[in-house]
Image 1: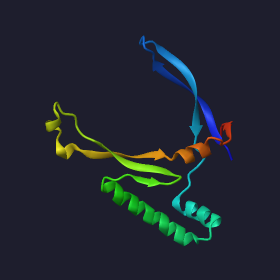
Image 2 (image 1 turned 60 degrees about the vertical axis):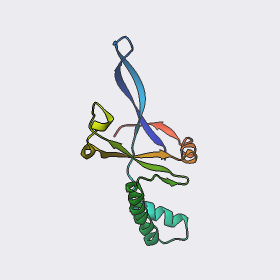
Image 3 (image 1 turned 90 degrees about the vertical axis):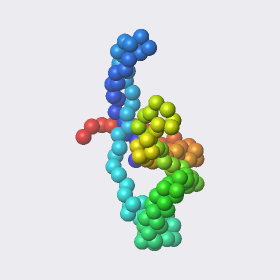
Image 4 (image 1 turned 30 degrees about the vertical axis):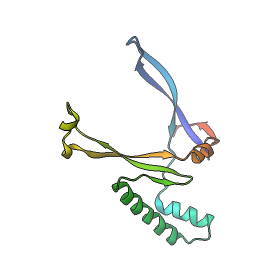
Length: 130
């Protein structure tokens, strides 16, 4: 299977505030793989049974959540590093940032370099519409 793409037109303003149009390749997702399917695929590639793999993945989710809530990043070798990003309401001085406005804005993920390198040789082809 290969990665699919379409060509999309994007408008932007250049440094002279002139509207420009450029064309770019945009990736198209071809589906979703859920936890059960991941567990099945891991089971097929190892000597572990699917239920054990599924349980380990669910436990991983819980450990990941717990460590992120402790303010730690979580690095999974060959996969990447997860961390939290915080945000708050703006204030005129550092002392005026309201504590109650500080919230988790998102979970960040930085892919492991080895994972990034491995997916770079994926086959790519133009999407032939549905």
